[in-house]
Image 1 (spheres, rainbow, N blue to C red):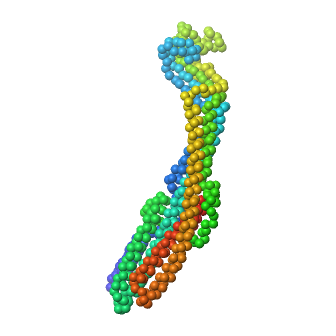
Image 2: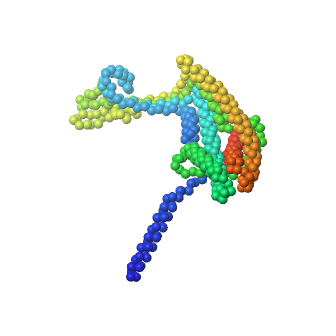
Image 3: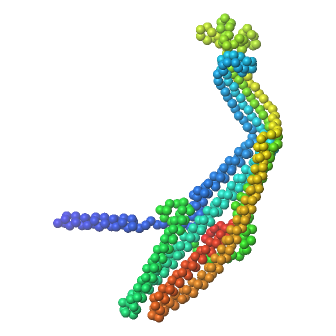
Length: 490
């Protein structure tokens, strides 16, 4: 009996533990994983590291640097080596004597040449200067690409924060409607209010639920847009840290002209346009260098080999493939150099490397090239570079005009947003006081549900307008700060 009781107790214990473990696993499966919160700075840093447009601009800088290195190395000598080996037959010049012969033989030619530019109309110098400014301009283009990305990420980040506040406002409105609906239901059940009041508030609560769903959808969409800007999967959890923002601390205390003058000094697109002008100017000077004579120092080394000069000496004193001996001992024509090979035949030892060594030819000189007529190629290049220089100047003017227009627009937007925010703030204060009084009147029975709904909707719209004006002003003011070279910090 004790054993039976003990077994039952053990089974019950195991069952309880198993059910507890299963419940724990179910709770873990039902509990969503914690969503990481991203600050604005983290979003910006991540976007700068992973954005493809920024990466492409980085490779543009690398390409410009390659061009600069190539221009600098053009000051060094140009060295080349050539090697040839083949068969010859028929009438051809002897590689060593240049006399025409009719024979079949193998030949080889080895050569190396070098050329050092001494003067070429300052073409190399100006090309180096052109590529130096091109590299600097590419770096400024990269900075502009980063600036555009930062502004876009900051705008999307603020949009997420804005929608989060709208969701909070919608939840507050729904909670207020549900609370008032519960109170009205009790009054209707007690006979103090007609059923129509309950139905009106029920419809109001349902409408507030729809508004909450719409705001949650808007928040989800804004988070999706931020994820797309960061180039992370939509399935990855992401939430943003709501920064401490106080619009009252943001004051537009500078004129649009002052902001524009600062922007001209710090904005990378202006610097890039100015550098492009300098680069195109050096391109003009480099192309004009092709109109001047070019002076260079040249050097070369050459050697030849021919198999017909490897004469074979027979014991009877005759030679194969040669009418005269080639190699002799100490200049004695009676003592040719040979080694014995099978079948009693003697072969001349004047082989490949001996011929290459003896046939070395060296040259050193100065080359002067005077351009006389080259089918208008050089002058056309000069004219094209002059046109590109003028286009670069116009592009710089257009860039400055665009920057001025952007600054002026941002300034007007910031001033208008500041006025809208102050007006919305006064409106919310008035609507909150009116709604507080309406709640008291409705609780006392001196106001109906329709009046209550109108007052509540007016308050919600006022808070929505205030939230929109608040973040619109904050972002517009930060854009003005950005044009002045200040970091985007919230």
